[in-house]
Amino acid sequence: MKVMKFGGTSVGSVEGITSIKRIVESAPKPVIVVVSALSGITDQLYNVAAMAAAGDENYLAEYKAMLHRHVDMIPQVIDDTMIQAQTIDTIKELFTDLSNILRGVFLIRDSSPKITNTIVSYGEALSSVILSKALKGAEHADAREFIKTIHQFGKHVVDFDQTNHLIKERFAQLSNVTVCGGFIASETQTNFITNLGRGGSDHTASILAAALGADVLEIWTDVDGFMTADPRIISNTYVIEKLSFSEAMELCNFGAKVIYPPNIFPIFHKKIPVVIKKT
Ligand code: ADP
Ligand code: ASP
Ligand code: MG
Image (cartoon, rainbow, N blue to C red; front, side, top):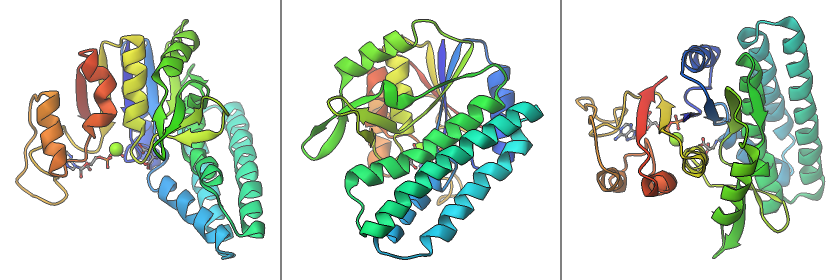
């Protein structure tokens, strides 16, 4: 079994989703697909929450842009017209809930961390539903049901006892393809929605791979692998064929953000290899 994680850079466009379909459909099964929000959506959600809390009515235009971006993509990535219509309905329902929450934030001019966490969770809630419908025969899993956090020293940290137990229960029967949103979680005690911090989808994927003893964790992104430097900044970079966890850690201290080693700590413990691939 393998876990395949597709970052925001891979799900930002119709072409990206089409590539994901090709990659997942040709992979040996079973697979668990962990997906981030569409590129830029998490930033946009933090932004609309702040705008609504500040009483800025323009939050509505931002909200509508996000709604259209998701809905417009559906007919282009889902062939079956019935599934298209069902998916559009589901996505619109999620957006109606989001709009109600934002309206509340706008009226009371306040967005607590609890509300902001709920608002930003829509990014992965939406992308994972769309991808699960775009991939034929795929099942959808809601990460908020099994990735559990506790509040410690002002941060939401993974409650590994609960999380590992719930993952084993949820995935006792593995479908050929299961799609799950990364990043999003919920608190053990209260079930309030939380998250694993920015870039946290890698963490979700690693937690799942470790709990289920995956053969490999594949991180699909927009670069060919772990490189000697960020190719967006340095031109003559090249891919490092193989590196240890501690070597990856050192490069990350110098800004290599392709993966953040603490996020993949669970698989390091289980000696599960990570492969970085370009979507
Ligand atoms: P995703 O949305 O797939 O999670 P990220 O933006 O988090 O993607 O990570 C991929 C980006 O990491 C690349 O586009 C690249 O610019 C950047 N990056 C920084 N340092 C490195 C490095 N050493 N090797 C590869 N990519 C790097
Ligand atoms: N969508 C989240 C973020 O932008 C998580 C992730 O992409 O890994 O930080
Ligand atoms: Mg990332």
